[in-house]
Length: 310
Image 1 (cartoon, helix red, strand yellow):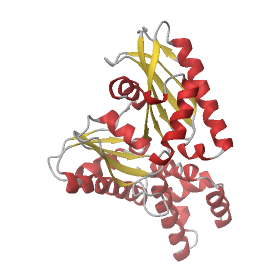
Image 2 (cartoon, rainbow, N blue to C red):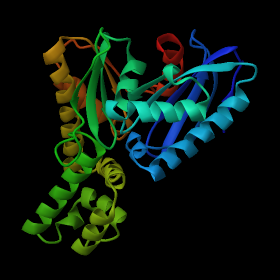
Image 3 (cartoon, rainbow, N blue to C red):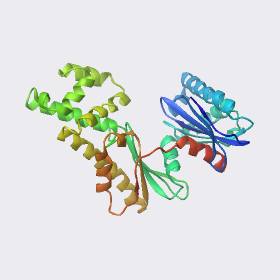
Image 4 (cartoon, helix red, strand yellow):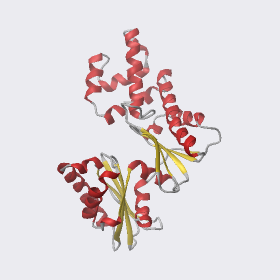
């Protein structure tokens, strides 16, 4: 349910748009939160065809319906959105659609991809690096000239080291290599037992059907099975430790390119087990200022950016 707080006359509307949900917030330039809520998600890629644009319009109409009702006597002057799947090529069509559905001038719509918005929510430009790990993984830095720099984020087929998909893939690889060498090895493996609970059984046919029928996000959620085994299984714990090292590599790549700065960890992977964050800290250069994972509230940050920077 949307949460309502005191209203203010001039408001920015911020959106943090994922594939499954959109988090939105109304705020004033001072940062005071006025209202917030959730609506259906979408991808910036959907603006390329008519059905996709209809889905985006539906989600935005849902945002507007709730936000307008909670704005009180406030007026939404500007919009800032971080959108998964967004790139600069779709800026014009997506901005026009947002302007129409959210009742603002197109010149007052500012768009980022979701990673850049997360980085701006964590730090002022030039101040620090964000390492984000969900299904995939990426590190990002917005410099003092508002230019986005990134490391990783190339998808599970190429890399995405340390993300949920990577963790799941590593676990499946280890389990089935052990079965190749010693059939029935899964009976002595807490890791394999937790994974087989999810896929439905210990026969290869269960893993094959589950894995090749799952979406990327569903496969990434198999990382939860790895975390469930971590305190009982050295192999599971080693995979999570290696995930932390992979995520540290992303942050270290930006440090090498742009020099030492503060670093913020974010994303659901860090909720899996404490050893992941511990491995990140142990792998990064000594003395780095590393902030533990926590809520970025990117939708709130976007609402403030909307008024200050559009």
